[in-house]
Image 1 (cartoon, helix red, strand yellow):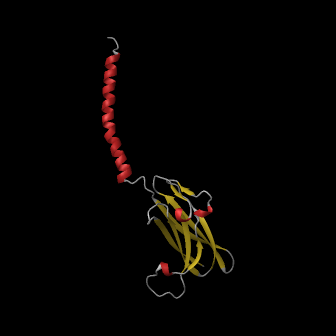
Image 2: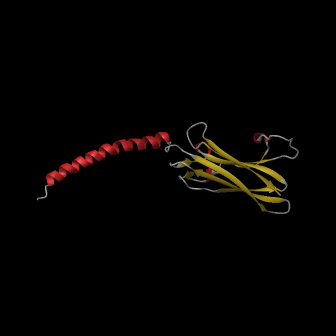
Image 3: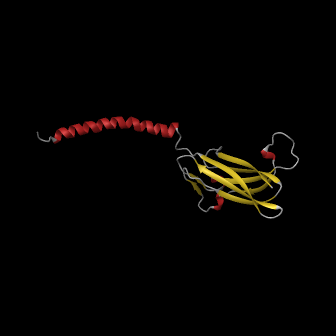
Length: 173
């Protein structure tokens, strides 16, 4: 029985044609699910903030604020500072003698700020997917007060409501 190259070629072409017919709908489904259903092409940032208190002197403490932006999406997010993507930190004071009940954080007085964290980087800030970042801002604050630490990342996308934020409350003794 001789090896028949023409028969093998015919069967190989048939197998490749069948494989192509199966691969095209599977590829179409993959494109649909990734770009339409799962929005993998969209930016998906997250930001968290935490604060710790360290000794400084007899009447003041060092408030160490950890701003942690993270890209939960699958595409890089580029921040260039200002209206092209930035991160701001506000430290607000809870004044003594507040009435019982809900506190409106927008009405608390701002004690300290760290505006435009990204602007200090010459080439901006590229948030790669899945990477944890930790920006540290430090403030010398009087002891015996309670603070609301608020951080916001905005203008990371071209839509008007592209903002993520987080806040934390810290007591300084």
